[in-house]
Image (cartoon, rainbow, N blue to C red; front, side, top):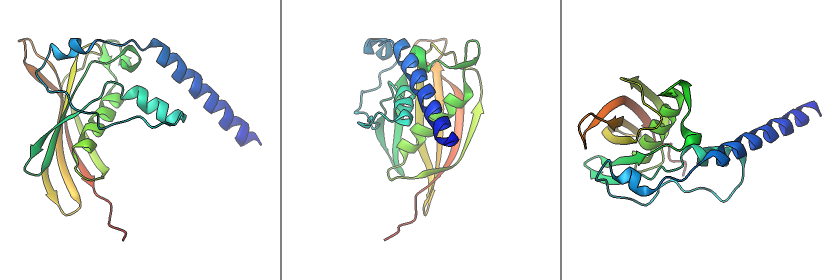
Amino acid sequence: MHAIMKRQYMLSLLHRTIREYRSLVKQYPASSCDAYTKLTKGTPLYSAPDSHEPQNEMMDSLLQGYHPTFKPHPLGREAESLLLLRPAQQMCYYNGKLFGGYIALLMDRILADCCCEPAVTAYLNTSYLQSVPPTTPILLRAWPERIEGRKIYLKGSLQIPGKVSQDWVDAIKTDALFIRPKDRS
């Protein structure tokens, strides 16, 4: 009985938190992102499920505005996504520096989308070269490095605008290993 009440309380708390974050979200015009790059717009790979489950609402909120584009690569495909974070996504542990855990989530997502077939993260090595201001546009990039059987080795970066117009600077670099599940047929 106690476990059920605790679970209901936690779900209620999560719902209230999500509702408060959603109320803070403001829509930014697409032109504010397009001014920083010449990336072509793609169709979103991530589409929100029709469920109102708390975990789906949270993921929808965290990935809002994420619309990757893809280019052919000899080992599969490269992925890019330009994001201008909304207020609810601008999570900072230290003032003016985007939270590293959120950055890792974004990098894990773009790397997973770079895989042509379903695969799971085996490791994600993230190097934080410089802090990322929460209000700056960010460019996520991912590409395959090599494939060995079910293993897909990937590289990625999170870039922010440089001092020169149209110049992007690596703020975060990642190395990752994704593994395709065994065929169970």
